[in-house]
Image (cartoon, rainbow, N blue to C red; front, side, top):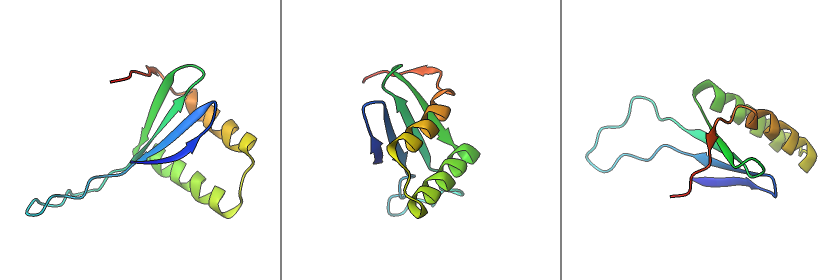
Length: 90
């Protein structure tokens, strides 16, 4: 797990697949995803599969052309509209 972004409005965490333990078979497909938490609404969305790949492409584009915080937050706001799950603390 790696925190990628933290602001007053959002947190973005990259969840990476665990390495198999010694002696365990490797999974067929190593999956990863991104959790986006909208602090304003206290909701979160988890992106995996094709959504995670699209978000990864966005991150790669940001690495080439550094965006402003406003540009990042506008993009995250679009993903946050998908959020249906209330944030639950364990």
